Amino acid sequence: MPKNLRATAAHLAAFVASLIMLLPVYLITINALKSTPEASTMSVDLPTELHFENFLIAIEKGKLLQSFFNSLLYATSATVLATLVSAMAAFVMSRHRTRFNRFLYLFLIMGIALPINFFTLTTMMQVTHLINTKIGIIILYAALQVPFSIFLIYGFVDTIPRELDEAAIIDGCRPRQLFFLVILPLLKPVLVTAGILNFLNIWNDFMMPLYYLNSSSNWPMTLAVYNFFGQYQSSWNLVSADILLTIVPVIIIYLMGQRFIIAGMTSGSVKG
Amino acid sequence: MKSHRSYPFYFVLAALVLYVTFFIIPSLSGIAYSFTDWSGYSDEVEFVGLDNFRTILSPDENYLSFIGNTLLFTFWTIIIKTVFGLALALLLNQGVRWFVNGYRVLIYLPVILPTLVVALIFRSILDPASGLLNSALRGIGLDALALPWLTDPRIALYSVIGVDSWKGIGYIMVILLAGLQTIPKDLYEAASIDGASAWAKFRFITLPMLMPALMIVTVLNVLYGLRVFDIVYALTNGGPGYATEVLSTEIFKAFSKGQFGLGTAISSILFLILVVTGYLVIRVMERQSDRE
Image (cartoon, each protein chain N blue to C red):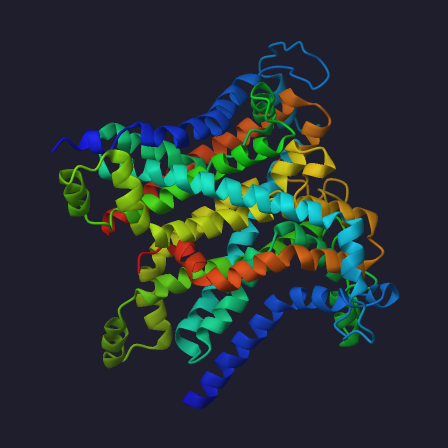
């Protein structure tokens, strides 16, 4: 095949693949603006009239404001908590490589593969009085993000020269000063990556609130959307509007941080 | 220099306490509880030996088919995602000249969407009467292919597999693309000089050099597939009948019905499968970081 033709065919294939990946987001975007009868088939046709009020209805009927702030609270607090404790742990385990710390590291990152036992975890949440509370779900989310965050940060600590630690210690830095003033600023790239991935994971999670939050005032957006879908299944325009409002923050973060996301996804799997 | 003073153990404690409290203790005590008749309706818990496991493995019950569905889901999603992910990675690595990053951003997009939302959108797309897929199939004259995707027990599991693969292909593509980019160009140049065909280059350079990335991708997919919940729950909730029931959706049903003993037994089986897989993950990742 001539070179030009090959390149054109490649672009065509990549273009079609991109379209297929984009189609669902396109579908809900245009259907969010339609009237109920027009959206009933969820077709690819553009709306004949723009119904922006769908968003207002979805926000009001779906209690989206409350669930938006719940999601924001859970994702932000748990991300900060998980990323910070993971960075501290990863720093010490990576720098001070005793046999015990090596074992501890493997023990901690084993959590990447472990399933959650929801039954005994319920008991644990009850014993610690964390069940059905906002603070409980935040701590739970933080705990769930620890293994992967440690794995991600541990590898990065190695790239920071030990001489920095030594210079800081000679200058009289205590461990806490060394970590917070010298190391933490240098970990910024990996902290941003871990932070974005943790935030998206928590924002998108549906399972923890399904098991552990039964009062609707504590629901995050995913659970609120699911519940809204149950009530308004026949009004796809409203469901689409509700879905769109849920994924807009995710898409914004993705577009802003896609370099970091891809760095995080590929680190550990391929070095390059 | 006394390094242990600068790297105190208490730095690890917060992470360790969170992890042990919410992962390890529940997992280990779960194994103990799987030998009991623990229920949501009574405070009394009695030891029942292997009863729960006998129930799960009994051919009169449906549990074996849930394990089968989980394995089928895992197997087919791995195959589909890897084949398409590899094809797209090769396309973006060699075929496409410009807008590579743009394509990558678009193809990766479904990965970052909430799984729940993806499932809801596909419930509309796969609707037998008015869904986009069947309308399109009818539109091009393929009426025979316009099937009841999520309500026919024979094809529902494969529809779920299809939707999940759609969502996950970008993830695999990105990892494999990063792997492809680490392969030195001069290997291909040398092969060209020796007159190697495109297929020979793929078979003898690309594939072996990509092995570590393919391994990781497979292991991550196994871990994901065995634990899959959201996509199944929101697309079919295990139905029609038990056609798409997997371990995690059954665990949720046991949870809702208060069958805690039986549920922990299913969880423990999943736990054992994953510990073995998890051990393999660590071994593979170790080998990766040693090579650095």
